[in-house]
Structures are given as structure tokens and as C-alpha cells.
Length: 219
Image (cartoon, rainbow, N blue to C red; front, side, top):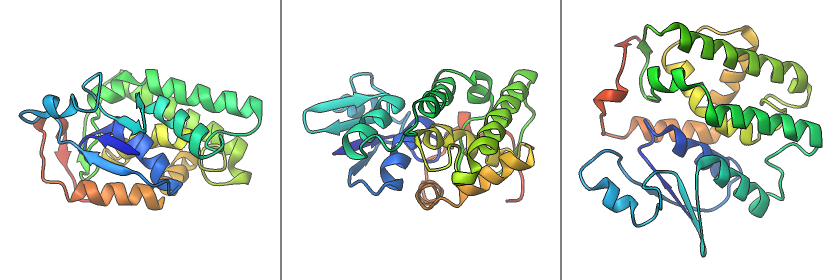
């Protein structure tokens, strides 16, 4: 099984399925393509029908889109356990993932993922509203499921993978959140798999100016 991803410092979509595979210790070959460099689309064309990352190659199957990959991995390799077992809780978890998958456009456009940086950034009211919504989602999930564990739905799930790039953005730009949400962010920062991703990102040399927004602050 191969997972094709982009640069770890910047590629938010790539992080999601990578984190799921790594957290659950599912063996896979990582193929990392430095995005937005000369010839990168030709290299991607060997793997991706959309010329985007991530892409999972598993035998004769090719799955693109981060949420689709997570769904596939959960069903084939985890007996569905990357989603809550209870039907109502599973539906809520999918709602969280779907909202993340299709929303938060202001955060995406104004706060690019940059794992190795600590920045100060002026954001618009739209991005501020997105951050408040994320805070609400984190706090609501923690209030309901924290007795079962420290992740959004108690045990680690696809929801944590989908929101991991947001966690990285909130960390990079020092966004103030409720105490409950900050506790969740600390839980994610201590996740072993996510720590490996961040360390790999720090060791990358690629610098993309359009992702280097804001003023550097002390880490």
C-alpha cells in the first residue's frame, strides 16, 4: 500500500490519512512529492487522477480525497473502528468530518498550514468566526465524550485526523480558544504520530512564500 502526499510542512490534506495510518500502525509506503516545484504535476500524474494529493494506492485500488481514504482504511484495515460504534455518535462524527471537509474557507485561505513556524497574523472577521466555530465544536465534543478519552469522540477517530490541520494552524498562529479546546489541542500535540509528522516537516527545506504569512514570533 502506498500513500502519496505533499510536503509535510504545508500539505494539510495529506496529513489527514497519513495520521490515521500512522496512529494505528498500519504499514504503508510513503511517497512524498514536493508541491509547486518544476515538474511536480508530471510526477503526480503517475499516481493521481486529479493531480492532487493525497492518493492511496492499495493493490488495484486508487482512492483520492482525504475523507474517502480515511473511510476506506477504517473499513478495510480497522473493522470500522476509526468511527464511533454507536450509530448516533457515528453520524455526529461524520457531521464533524463533513463540516471540516467542506467548510472553514476563511481559515484555509488566511491561515495556511505551516507546521514549523510560529507566527503573528491579523485575520478577518470571517476567519475569526471560523475559529469560534471550531472552538465550539471542540468544546462540545469534549464535554460529551471526554469521560471516554481525550480525543474529540473519546477514542481517536477520523474526526481527529480531519481536524489535525486545523490544530496545526491554531498552534502556528496562536489563536486563543476556550480552556477545553486548548486541552484538546495539547492532546493532539502529544500524539506520537502527529509529533513525527511535525518533526519531519521541520526537517524539510522547501519554502513556499505564499504559505509563509504573518510575522515570526518566538516559539
